[in-house]
Amino acid sequence: MTTLTRPRGRAARGGSTAVAPPPWWRRQGAQGWLYAGPTALIVVVLFLAPLVLVGWMSLNRWPLLGEATLNAPANYTKIADNPLFADAVWFTLKYTVIITVVLSLFALGLALLVQERRPGVGFFRTAFFLPGAVGFAAAALLFYGMLNSDFGPIDPILRTLGIIDEPVSWIGTPNMALFSTITLVLWRFAGFNMLILLTGLQAIPVAVYEAARTDGASRWVIFRRITLPLLRPTIALMLIMSITGSLLAFDQFFIFTNGGPDNSTVSMVMVIYRDAFLRFDLGGAAALSVVLLIALVALNALQMRVLRRPE
Amino acid sequence: MRYYTTMSALAVLFLFPLVWSGWASMEEPGNYVEMAQFGEGLGTYLTNSALVSVMTVAGTLFVSALGGYAFARFAFPGKNLLFLATLAILMVPYATVLIPLYVLLGYIGLQNSLVGVALVFVMFQLPFALFMMRNAFEALPKELEEAALVDGCTTFRAFVRILLRAVRPAMVTVGLFAFLASWNDFFAPLILLNDGASFTLPVAVVSMTQNTFGAIDYGMLQAGVMVMAIPCLILFLVLQRHYVRGFMSGALRG
Image (cartoon, rainbow over the protein chains, first blue to last red):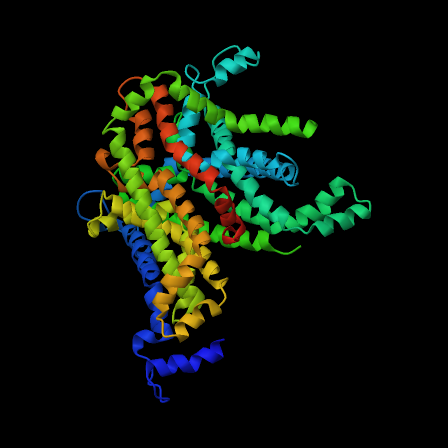
């Protein structure tokens, strides 16, 4: 087809066999850059330039309003004196460990439950995922109302069931606030993680399972010896996403617990936000952002090594 | 049977909060009336959110369709570097980029601007969108445009007339992700918008809990939750297949 039409195309263009080199805008490289231009523009102006700027800001006293003045390395040295940040690091790490373990196990359970095709399973998959379609901010506000002792339905339901006799202060103590937040995140993200695991589960060939079954392997052995190892890359991906997402947690603590009670649920990103927009110290916030970036890149590199290692 | 009992119980747990919120928002008919008059008025926030979402979806589709074509079909210097730089957006914490963007958008006259917020959303969507569109173009047989090119068609005409039509499913997926992200995101507009009249819905509704004088109106709050959630729920239920394809495409396998 192409060989037949090529001569005709050439004839139509010039009519002679001596083809002049194409003008610059017809060349591969130039054309590629024209199409990739908008991508490059966005990446350079809105991503790379801010990365350079945040580094520069972190070396300056940079108030929200007013002139910036060089003060390096004060923004970095004062991080150590920021007790709120030290507490936030500890709290964020604790939250990350708990939520990653709980969420992963719960999502794995859900994925195994909806793995096989049977009547109604599509409905259940959709039902488990549906909270994931709601924005996280909306989900946090929903729980804010739902867990309110006077307005929400949870207290009356638990009272009717005889589980509690007094109103529960769901975000009133540090531990309850953490517990309630974990419930919220579980509700919002379990289906999302289930879907990730499901794509991994469905990539395992049915023949592998059948072979194991004919060999008389029990369900547990099949799970341990076949499902888990073959699911390893997918589980690694889910863990990396969960760990990264949790270390950068903001919405749930800003909206749902507002960092309280007594700053017990202030995450690292919340400290950055507070430094920048409540204490008007953009330079300090920039220094914290740079530290967070370096820590995260290092952690991601480490995770890729550990989790991606073949069996 | 035990399977279906367990599954139904779980489904109730997952669906109950949504049903309760819908019910609580309608318990008093006044909730939606109050919600409509809250702050600058629901109309303002809805318009702002809709504008940001439309600009984000259009911008993401425009940039990633052209970019995906470039990465799938052309060899150009710096190609791999640009692709890696785009994927690196995923590695960098949201806050690390937004703090300087707050300053940078001020420099280019886009402080407190819905256009600025939309551009930032386009940037955050780009790794997924570009990856998705590049794969979609790569999956098309070269013969599809070759015939047209040989007939003297420019690559741009082949792109618009033939290829864009063929990658439409991928564009629906990219558009859906871009809409859900821009409609729902809270952190970027919280930082980049500082005037009540330009707030998007999530920032406005959250401010109901934080800036109220006296008691929080929980009924009105759930009305706000519903206004935010219902478009997403409908869109998700209608376009579920396209959403799941986003997962399957391997874009998330990093």
